[in-house]
Image 1 (cartoon, rainbow over the protein chains, first blue to last red):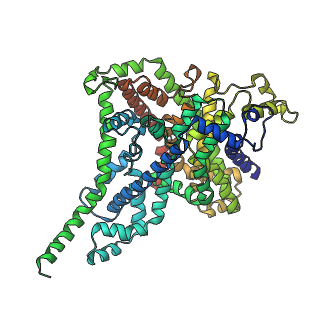
Image 2 (cartoon, chains in turn yellow, purple):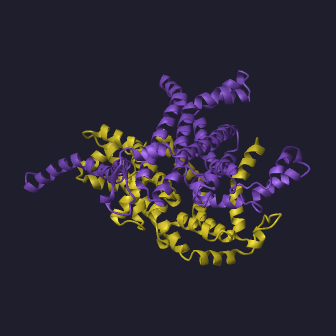
Image 3 (tube, chains in turn orange, yellow):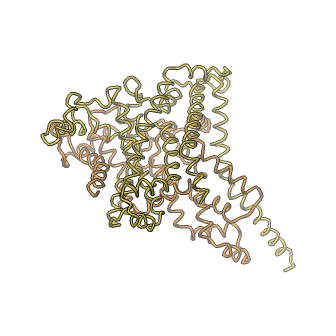
Length: 267
Length: 326
């Protein structure tokens, strides 16, 4: 049993190991039999080759970081606000509005991809980071997730007490609800950040110039151009995975729990 | 408190309490209208038009069902739909066949740290970029120097593994990405590798909700491991299996990233790796046939709906009925 579990783990982790190995090997080492299974010494040369082929690499990295941070912050704000309203208020048409929102989660994203591009070019948002995070910043999934969390974590009496003290509704949300739901926000934040970091099709469609590329599109552009220097491509790939990998090593429990909680709710 | 300011404040407090929730939920509906509903309506309209997107809207020409008729008689469309369905089966089915027993094993008495180490390593591919992993697999699948072919060559010739892998010798080296027959298996391996850990975590979470006493009672009654898996875990997991399979269907029908990177954006030799999503992308953004692409997205939507319905009839109805009984 342990043998089987370990074998699967090795097969799963191997491609990552292999990526780091190739990222440090010179072409002569990569193209040889039998393969060299340990780190080479050409990391620096591969880095220079990567920057030669993709001078905008760090700019693309920054774009990815910027889009992911903006996506996370805006999603957390609008989804907690919406989730708070659905969890804590009784208002007319609440159930209908909620059902409508849930129904929109069934729409496959590919359905809107052609008009998405057309709209973004009308708005002049081609090559703009906001094209990637604005459309999804109040996601139905996020509102749903935080609604469930708020309903369980925030006592209504607390809000009524604040109202008697003359707190405005937005202040109640900002000063009382937000601090109480930090774990819920962390869950949604992780899922949103990772989703944005890995988004490919959307970025491929609206980002047209090299300076505006996020990492997945930038790495893809290396492919046709520079097919022989796998060391450089693997180094770029490794650098693009590294941030997620480092965070995962420190917070794997929390990250797995976040994704599992998201899926549990969708059920 | 009868001064006008106090009255006004109390009036305002009641007002804002009534209207605040509408204000708080409005961002979703505004954004959904602008970036969800409008594009969908627009794509429906567009699917009845011929439009190259280079001119303005006035160059849109009404052609009725012509786009749909074209696609339904287009061999490339049927091929891409066939590819997508084959990939759905050969990458989707093994995901669940591997994830279920794996989750079952992980749920048995394991040291918690070890259990976490295993599940973390299975899970990690799920949160890495599909572009990055497809590039890594691009090197693994290399014809002469790819590590996979070198491993298979070793296994086929080494004395201790010859009896099992010897038959491969005639096929090596396998041209994973250069020959039409091998492209789908290559894509399926990447997709499988990317997703099985996710399903394992889902099933493990489901199994952990089954009380330990259930397994213990079964053991007292003389049930062996096989019985535990087949007669206790599987039936109790049915709602989760239904959910996970639904997610696989919806996700894999829109499969784009992995085949796009592995085939260099084309679909590969003989278009054997061209999924509907790739064909749609090329139609819209290489050949700028926006109307045809919009029609294709609707046909894809309908086929996802049909498959989901089939899945519901096969797996879901029974699973959800069972849940209702409890």
